[in-house]
Length: 203
Image (cartoon, rainbow, N blue to C red; front, top):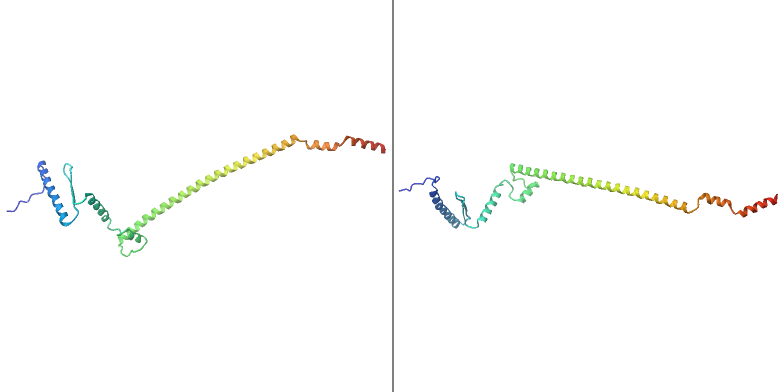
């Protein structure tokens, strides 16, 4: 007599549902272990019950299995990319393009355009930074030039004042030019008397 096939549907009775969950979970973990041993494969199972309780089984380290799955997902999520970074570098230099499809060439072109825009944007930023630096240096040089001019003007004024004071000191301590001239013209009084006597005798 053939066994009646059990209809797969949700068990509404919580007690019966819990009993069925425990039996099926143990059976699933047993089958997973058998598969790992018989076929020499890595198997990892993670189960959350209706109450949120965690159950898991792994033939080796669960962390290693999860890391392997993540790495595999990253590698398979971009099937249209070149097989290696070296191939991509050659393609971006315009080499080994014969085996690429139109879609791959368009994607490569888009990648180059995006890279070129970024390069030009960064180049413009650096040019503007250099312009700002030059403007700042120009303002600094103008300020230094103005300061030097002011110092030169002040030093010139001080030189003129020192020269004027020196002239005043000489005129104050010595004799004036007029007094010296008068003194030299007056001569010796005796010489004047002698000249007078000579003129009288000759007359």
